[in-house]
Amino acid sequence: MKKKSFLFCPVITGLFLLLTLQIIVVSGQPLNKEYLSSSKNSYGNHLAQTPPMGWNSWNAFHTDITEQKIKDAAAALVSSGMKAAGYEYINIDDAWMDTVRDAQGRLQADPKRFPHGIKALADYVHSLGLKIGIYESAGTKTCAGFPGSLYHEKTDAESFAKWGIDYLKLDNCYNEGVDYMQRYEGMEKALLATGRPIVYSLCEWGVKDPYQWAPAISNLWRTTGDISDNWNSMINIVDEQVGLEKYAGPGHWNDPDMLEVGNGGMTNTEYRTHFSMWAILAAPLIAGNDLFHMTEPTRDILTNKDVIAVNQDPAGKQGYKVSDDGDQEVWVKPMSDGSFAVLLLNRGENRAFMTTTVEQVGLKKATSYKVVNLWGQGNQDEDKSYSTNDLIRSSVASHGVAMFRVWPESK
Ligand code: GLA
Image (cartoon, rainbow, N blue to C red; front, side, top):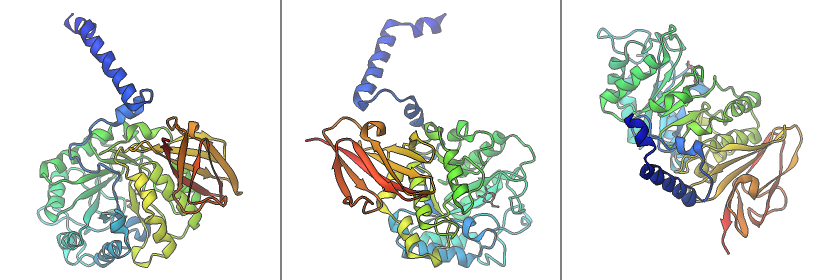
């Protein structure tokens, strides 16, 4: 039994123990199985090393899209300062295509709404220093009833690559019960065969536990059904992310769906909560509002650099919940520099005074800690930043958050 004697060889076992000990010592924390598994490499394109940031047409416009609207969004992404804040992808969602394929069986853009075709649009988006994404379905039709990519993976991937597409969202409508792996892996192989780096985003709605299999074949995968522009929808999606942190990491992300910030169905307090939660969850930050008609408060939320830095941290650790008292929750996200992002979430109907401790957060021992409020001035006559040796606290509005970054200070 060769295998057995290899496993129990004392030299190998000793080396293994030494390595394990080293990992514990280096990280200064007990081995976290979840984070070890999240560091595995996945889909072979080396893209999306941090959660993708960009804009998608669906939440604001649904099927009512035109070439001009996409161009306006791209220009607004630049002029609003969103590009400077890190937003990069302009993603066209459903309904960009003609109802029929061309004589060669290739997809074609709707000639009325996209008169210059997708290649010209991609060239324009690229000329602004941005990247462009497109939508299809791993079914016989898209959700809006346009030609689907199932059984056309090679042809469609080649069209996308030829047009200069950088990101593909692949939906799940009209899948005819065909095995999910066959459908989603079929497109993965077709995309890789084009040789063009294309971020691959699965929109399978979390039906077949995609976090179990999607990390190996894609860059991101939807974990739930569609978000709607209201508090209940958004906060229910947050609840569905609990426990999924072990599956995310650089190159492969859980996707709790696109942002609704600025679409009008929530208050600015609720939109700040939405954005902060997506940041803590290391979720893709894909804005879904009408960028051309964006209000100042919406812009301020979407471009908060400190909150975006939490989302884009290179360690790529998805945040998780450390306490839950019904209406009050504490979420944390370990950052690559030894700090933690800390979020106090008040789901209740009344303002609440909330606290957590450096110990509950999981911060390493230090004499004091620097606490920076990422949404500006605190509500306790606190400064934007303060020092503590224990409590992190804030009064938090109903449906609101307080969000901090906390650094151990060595004295
Ligand atoms: C599905 C997806 C949405 C959107 C629409 C388009 O519902 O989950 O995100 O792409 O299809 O029809």
